[in-house]
Length: 412
Image (cartoon, rainbow, N blue to C red; front, top):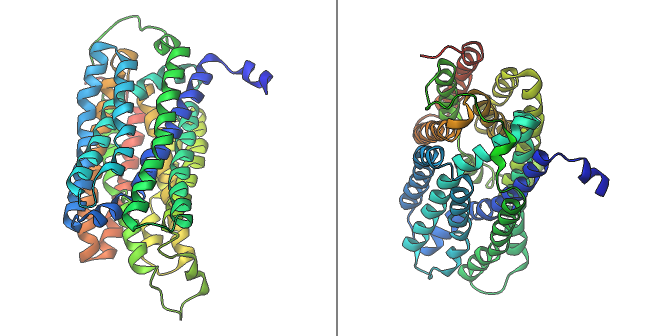
């Protein structure tokens, strides 16, 4: 084992250490995400309030990324901005254990605070990773990081599922509050690992050579085509909250006349269904990330084409095998987006303005994800076939823009 560690390059060691930071971080906020809606309901929030706070949280979490990307590029304070964002992000989660039994307003504040912390850290964090990725391959580096990240996203909901399974004493409120309190452990581990990584690698920017010329951020045609592509993809990619709502409505009340496999889905196993999607996400990120280093944009085009029909399998049938197939395709799309999409930015945008590039990327992705989720949610109540058609069409429409981005490198 020691010999293998000695063979690791410093850049790869940095990627692995940062991956452990993300693992504990995702255990914290993805564990919370699996019960936030139920907790807010328990505290007295209405369905409209929960929907509004969820949308507002995502809007805050993505819209601020452009501003903090610009701030990061101007200040070059990669570590301080990353650390501040992480501390706000992970500490807001266990704070939910401290709200009172009717404290839904304070709980909403903490949820939005967590998303704001994520917005602060994301451009700086991705830029730090991109420096090391320049040595190890962008696709592989972001894929390894995403795999560790999603293992945390798997472990968080499973941990809370086990707590709820075995902790039967006390009120429902006390059980939920205890779950959030337990998440203080991975939150603390996140901060500890973050400082360990910083101490070992205080200047990750040295992994990537300085550019010959320092120039302000300029849009290139290939970057604009790429932003158009990822915006369409985000618009059509249905958020898991809508998937979860559909499953809880259509699959947890199946009649006994249907296949016995329907017993695989019930209200108690819903967190495990999400955890399974996160595992698929992890492995697809690794596969398509490595493919990106070898095949370039073809990995992005292939992953989009494979995952695009997931809505058809999930929403068009009342069949558990079809549901599971759709969730696997959803996980493939999510994994590819979290690894390959970030890797592409690191190869398009030069070092000096990369945080700004990531900020623009995250901002566009988040805005179109928000608008798409809103429209697709409305269509779900009006016409599920129309929702499926819009989802698939928007994702497939991204492919020509990916192709144009790969072929065009002229500045405008």
